[in-house]
Length: 129
Image (cartoon, rainbow, N blue to C red; front, top):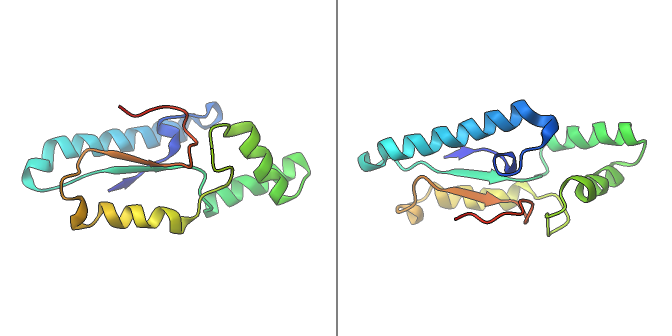
C-alpha cells in the first residue's frame, strides 16, 4: 500500500515537485498491481488530504508568520482559500486515516487491488469513475 496525497487529483500550482512525486508514486502502485496481482500481491494507494501531521503543522506555522495571525486563523484561512471543497471544514486526524490503512492491509480487502482510496473530507471536487 502506498500513501500519496490529494495532490494527485487536485495539484496545487506552488507544489509542482510534490504533485509530481505523489502522482508518480500512485502510478507506480497501479503498475505494480497490474503486473503482480495475479501472483497474489495486492497493491493499492490512499490519498489523504490536509491531515494533522508534522508536515501540515509546518505549513500552518509558515502561513501564520506570513499572514501575521494565530495558528487557528492560519488553518481557517487555508481552508477557505485553498480547500473550498473540503466539506468537513477541518483538517483530518491521523486516527481517521489509520482504519482505512488497516482495512486495506487486512484480509477483508482481498479482492481490492490497483485502487486508489481518497480520504479527503470532500477536499477534491471530482468523481472517481
